[in-house]
Image (tube, rainbow, N blue to C red; front, side, top):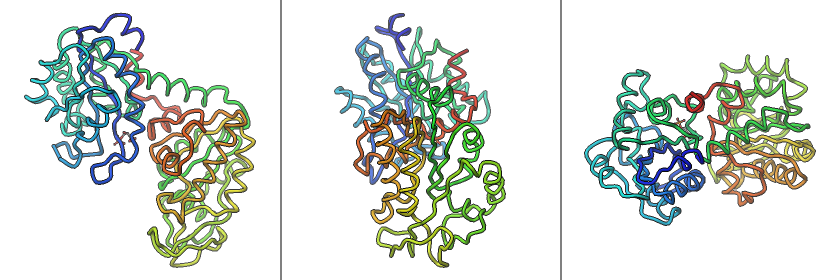
Length: 398
Ligand code: 3PG
């Protein structure tokens, strides 16, 4: 970003891609972390007198306007955090966006409506994406520049992330630069012992990262819904727990190859239904009763994992260990998080990746500064660690 600021942006249109894909409950933002993380770049551009046009998505609307996915709550929050009015265009690249872009003065911020209201944003057809990108560029005027600051979307080959960068002088924003610097530390020469904790519901989303990290790390702790497919691969019955039957074979193979590195829960808190008021009890991982579902890892698992984590010098955590949103099933996630905070206090380098884990940290009242870094990227941070090429990053290097 500094290169752009040095080149001078006063009076120039600067198109910024941010990731404002925040959790909402009844129209209220429950975790503004991603908006907060976007402030340094936006503030720097505002202070330098740029005419800032921000694009972002929220959720996965079907390529057409849908009030449920409006960025209105985001615009309000962004204005509050930036300490200045943020205009929200009523459309993406339509008449309202054009009129507002035209009327911008130095230091103004215009947020375009949810970029995914335009079906061309996520189109697989490059020419469609390029057409949207050209319209975005036109809004920013002659001599415009592009700043990529939505780290959470750099794994997406989409018009506002990828195609726009091909049309304009492009720069990484401070968030993207900071995230890449941190994740690079996890892939190059990470201090040992190196522990990775994976959770979340779907094992299929994490296979790539397990394949990539298992040979490089000392410990790979598995919790959350994905643990049950591994437990099934060990031959245990998992009752009504989440299970991806088609992945049992893959999990078996992973256990055969990396059994010395992979640590599975030894006890499970099961519930009689998926609800905050479910009846709960703790059972051995090998003895999940029929009719019950595993909703958290048990206390014995937490203490075993905590021992490993407290000795680690590098920790990466992605995905909650249980349904932390329900009090009765939050102890596992909290225990894991506390163990990582403890390791960080002893000097470990710890990174939390993924919206759910970051939200868990905040919901469970843990200090943000108990971790070395809380990444704003879920899928993006996992794909980075898998060693995949991220289109939104490679395009910045071109
Ligand atoms: C995320 O929430 O991980 C990013 O904002 C990307 O969203 P997407 O998975 O809908 O592309």
